[in-house]
View 1 (cartoon, rainbow, N blue to C red):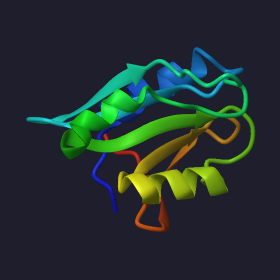
View 2 (cartoon, rainbow, N blue to C red):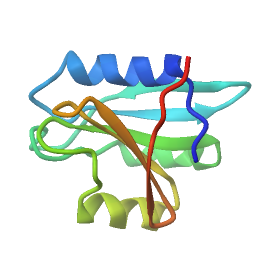
View 3 (cartoon, rainbow, N blue to C red):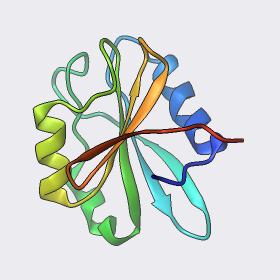
View 4 (tube, rainbow, N blue to C red):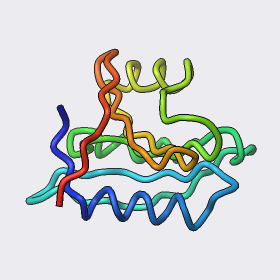
Length: 117
């Protein structure tokens, strides 16, 4: 089960809720502590997908997870999400605006995130 604190989840949720009509994205970095960094979604159709600048993968060793939101529907990863996460070998943290919940997808497994203070 991922170790995600309420501060990081709150920052990700706030970004998603402030942009309810599009998929937003960000990175969770593991430095001294887990940190959330919003990133620009460069997808041509932000209402349905997200894409990050490929240069962020230069920092792959420090990336704890890639975050994005699902404006409609649940937080379950799409086939694209699953394939991208597994190809990059980086977990995905997905937030559903509709259900106000997070799922953590890593190594083919989907885990609900239990929020803690």
